[in-house]
Amino acid sequence: MPTAKLSISNSLWVRGEHICQTQRNAISETQALRERGAQIFLLQGATARDSLDQLKRILWQSDIHVVLSWLHPKELNALRPLLQERGNFSLLSDDWYIHPYWLMRDAEYLLFRKYQGIAVRLGVSPFLTGGQPPLLFDPRPDLSKYPLTCAALRPLILAASPFVDAWQWWQRHDQTIDPAKLIYFPFAIEPANVPVGTVAPCYDFANTGGVLGVWIMRDAYAPFHHSFANLYQDRKLLMNAIAKFENNPFTFYDCLRQLREKGLLTWPEYILKCQQSRYLIASGGLHDATVPKYTEYACVGTPMIGRSLPYEYPWLDDCLFPVDMMHLTPEYLKPKLQEALDIYPKLRQNCLNWRDRLLKLYDLQNLLDLVQEQADGKPIRPGYLKKDLKHPSPAAAKA
Image 1 (tube, rainbow, N blue to C red):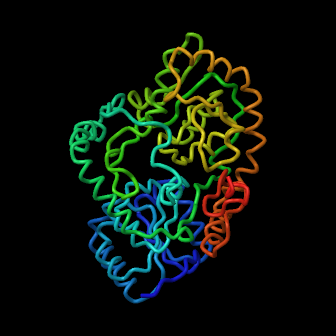
Image 2 (image 1 turned 120 degrees about the horizontal axis):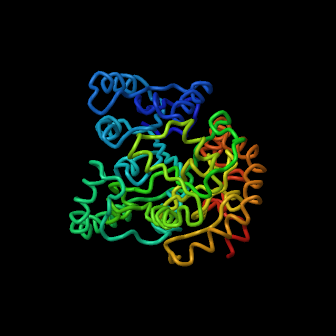
Image 3 (image 1 turned 90 degrees about the horizontal axis):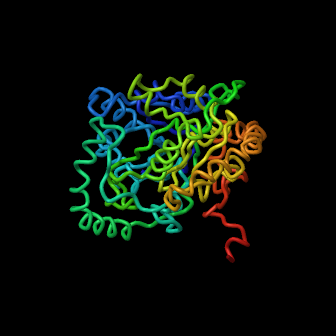
């Protein structure tokens, strides 16, 4: 079938049913798409034969463009025979490196939550810019089934990686990248989910996120030898280093302790802990991935400590105290933490000053407009990027 230009309102969005009924961003995004007149199909799973057959009937009775989103790799592979025969589909990806390569290769448009995926595909950035993870994966502090399995498989990955990395090289050189088909679609934020706190901070520093980022690299632009390595190593090192100063002299909260004792934080508990902290540990990992926590933290009025991003969020440097534990020895951290507390009032006020602008920038309907504008060939509007790699300014191009 002929290629159809991406139209948000005139496409069929195929989405994972479970995620779209349980994940906040997925729920609100589905509603926003419906409000724009887009058709929605919720796939019930990789083995749901009735759901797969129903989707097949819909697609073969129409030439509508399909946008795949919020689907697991198993669900995407279950759709492979249909998609490869029919074509005329695009993919919205969060962790783009875990998607099957055939899907990334054959999609008409690739929509990235993380601009790093665009930078890597354009050859402007390596996959990792924040340093290299340890050779072997240490699953602590989470000794559950998945991390332990990843740790056990890591040596096998290293043994197989020279052969798979060579195959990925051939895959990359067999593909032509069209920058016009790479679209940035950042995470949205909803005002009701991120209220500004009125409670006084009781923690100097806090961790309210995970410190283990381990995946299997399926896409050819993500080196296979990074499979099951901890790409959140910088976040883990910073958390562990700050924890050593707990009550000597800083107060510190770690959500992973509660996870082991009481289970996951609810959303209200998560927001409360963010509000009760002077600084929140933040990092997109060694691969500079955009994560929703950056905007969530800023919008609740709590500054961050950690690593910034090279391409996205030009406002972030106003709201973050930079510390990179991949290039800082622990003995130099304590004075940096005190320095952060000294300028806390300024960064706190910066977050509050940015809140209303961030809520407008990352409003879902604004972001859907942003996506459509890019599909129509327009550059990304100001405010979202530090560097637009597809439409560099004349000065940037000369540099």
